[in-house]
Length: 72
Image (cartoon, rainbow, N blue to C red):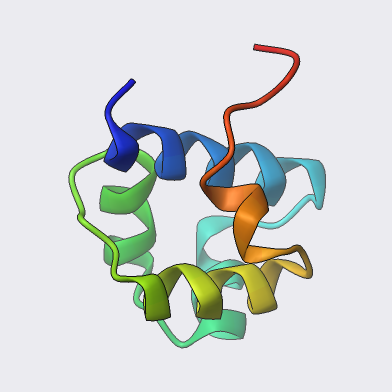
């Protein structure tokens, strides 16, 4: 799977599990809602710093955003 798509799917899955909207995640993380949307669709190529910042905002490890979902 494409890494951009994998990160996007993981961000979306974790965000939804935590019952956050894209707007709420944007506010918490400091990224725009448009960026979050593009990321979740696999259209963004996040840096390691972006992955780290999103993981902090979501309250998970940065490795959770790059690891394939075991249930998928």
